[in-house]
Image (cartoon, rainbow, N blue to C red; front, top):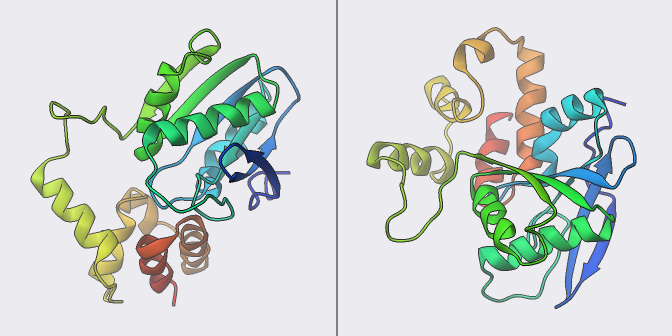
Length: 212
C-alpha cells in the first residue's frame, strides 16, 4: 500500500567483510529493478515519496537501503570509501537476482552511483544512471558555491533554535517554501517527523528539534 511502501527496512543481507545491509523492496517481481542510493547520514526511507510514485507506475521493483553504518545497517569500524559503498549497493542488486539495474543516487549517493558504474561486473548490466545534487569529486570537481556550503553547514550542523525564520531556513533544503507554507500545521508536523526518522547523526538531531 502507499502508506507502507517505504516502511523502515525489515530485510537484511550479509555481505563480505562483516557488512550487513538493511533494505526493503516494493513493486512487481522481475529480473530488472531500480536501486535507490541515499546520501550522507540519510536512511533509505528518505526515498519514500519516490518509492510510492514508482510503485504506482508498476514498471519494475524498487529497492532502497541504509548505507553501511547508517540506520539499521551494520559494518565493522574503519575507513570506508565510496567504492566500498558502491560494492555494497551492487551486491544488494545481485542478491535480488537483477540482470538489469537502473540506479538513482542523490548527493553522496550520486558519488556512490558513479563508482558503481565503474565496477567491472556492473558495466554491462547498468541500464540507466540518474545523478541528483552531486558531483564527481577530485581536484577539478565542480563544487557548490561558498555561499551554498555556508548555508548547508549553518542549517544542518549548528544547534537548532525554534524561531520561525530558522525553521523555514532549514525546511527550505527539502521543500519549496511556497508549498510548505500551504501545508496545515498537522501536515507540517508529520513531514518533520518523517524527516527526523530519515536522517541520523547531527542532521537527524537538528531536524528532530523542529517538531518539538
